[in-house]
Length: 330
Image (cartoon, rainbow, N blue to C red; front, side):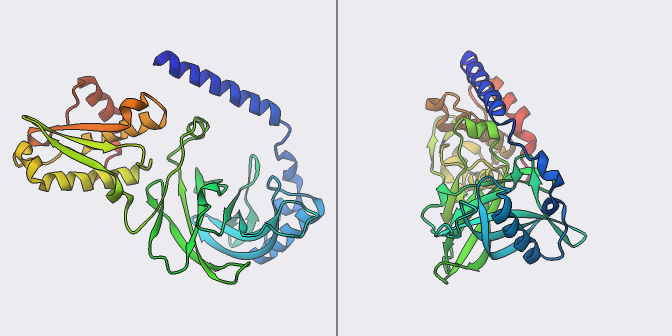
C-alpha cells in the first residue's frame, strides 16, 4: 500500500511539473500594466462597461470568456460576484444560450477593482437549467485570504428545497433569467474541503438538493452484539466538510443515546462523540484518497459499554484522535 501511494504521488508530481512547463508562458504578469486591472471604479456598472469594451477590443482576461450584458451582482464576504451573459469569441456578439459567466470584484474603501490572481481573472460559468449543475465550471477564488472553490447552481423559483455544497447549505439570491424573463434562484457556496491534488486524483465535490440537512440522508444500520453495537455507515455519499461531519456526528450520537437497542450496551452512557467524529473522518479521508476502497466504503464503528468508541486495532483509535479529534466541537 505504501509503495502504491508513493507511486501515485510521484506520478502526480511529474504531471504537475509537466503542466507547469507547458503553461509557463501563460501567466498574467503583463496584466499588471493594464489600465483596467489597476483602475478603481465607483460602481460595478462602470467597471463592467469598461471590462466588456476591453475584452471586445483587445481580448479576454479570463481564459476565453467574453462578458456581455450585466445580469446582477451581489456581495459575498470581501468580494462581489458579478453575473453576466458571455460569448466565447471577442468577435462574436451571439451569447451562450442558457449559461452565465461569473467574475469576481474586490472592494476597498468603497472602490471596485477586477479581482486578478495568478492565472487571470477569477471566474466561473453556470447553466441556468437545474439539470446540468454538475457540468458547471467552478471558480477558484481567494475569499478573506483563503483559497476556496466556489460553486453556482440554479433551482426553479418557488422550490423550497435547499442546495448543499459539500454538506454546507448554499446561500441564495433571486434574479431574472435574461433568456426567458422568468425568476430563477441562484444558489452559491464555497468549499475548501477538497484540495487541488485530491481533485487531480478524482475526488469530487458533492451537491444535494434536499428538504433539510444531508446528515439525515446518510444510510446506516445498527447491529447488537454481546458486548458492543456496530454502526455500519455508507461512506461514499458523505460530504467532505467538517461542518457537515460535526452535524452528522451529533445527529447519529443523539439517535444512539436514545435507542433502546444501543442503551442495552451503553448502560446509560453517552457516545464518545469526539472519537466517533475522528474515526468517521479517517474513513472519509481514506475513501476520498482511494485507500483500500473495498474496506473503507463502509465505516464499521464499534461502540462499547458507557459509549466508548473502540476500534479492534488500538493504534487506529490513537491515530484518528490525533489527526482529527481536535476538529470536533460541541
